[in-house]
Image (cartoon, rainbow, N blue to C red; front, side, top):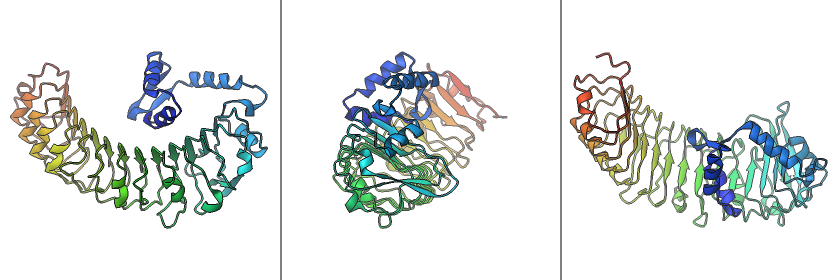
Length: 416
């Protein structure tokens, strides 16, 4: 998964994930793939698991990690948990009938050092939900990560008394019962997790509104990807002052950008495949934003001229949108490295300001209606890659070959 998510758990546990990941990469033990995904070779994974198995070959409950479903389930069902267990994961996959698997609090009594708990890692279409019952006031005190796919619609919050005081990451991906605030009473648990840094709601297709976020919540990453029924972002999102990443990819019912003016530290904004028609900004907002992706927003027709205030922006993708032009002020984005306008079929011209993008390395105009580049492109000294398909200007190479860094010009299918 995205390497930045477990980063918070490791850091909260006293590790130095930035330096450690660099060290592991240098030894070719892990690699970072597309979308910043942290990957490990299967042979290395098997090697690591063998090390854990040798902690105690006969008694899984005496090992630090339990990832095998049968072994983990046996430890819980028989109440054989020990202080040595730090991570436990279950994976329900039976789709024969809808079931709710319940665990009582006394089954977790001796799992005092548990910091990673995945109650259900099943495919999001699985018909089994995991439920916990009892009073958990003195349990999970060291828990940093809770994965709870398939959370039930109703459970007794008061009697449960779930203590999530040290929870850093909450993953409720694929929870089909998770809906608006009034219908799902689990929001209270989330909002009381004061150290929560990552809230992942990927694929919660019945969620049509976000809850009211309190000012005390120090959330860093809010992931709403694939919440196809989401139509509104509650205005209280401005309370998330520490938010650095907001992912709304695939929220196809979402028609309007939320007001993010007060979130000064936002660095990443993903609105791919939404129904947003205009991207607006405030003069003093999002000055730290580095990554803005609005790919395949089929209703997107306008970019605000105030984009010039995104002084830290390095990556902008508007692939597949219906914009006809870009604001002249885009030339103010001195740190921009990537500008992707691929498949913007209504885009006919580029503003002269494009030549002021002194840091631009990649300009992708593939499958646009642009037939002529502005003369200012000759000033793009840092450009390494330039792509365009319908450009017809005969002196096209002469206006671009001034760049000492240029390594690729791609004009495939440019018949004229």
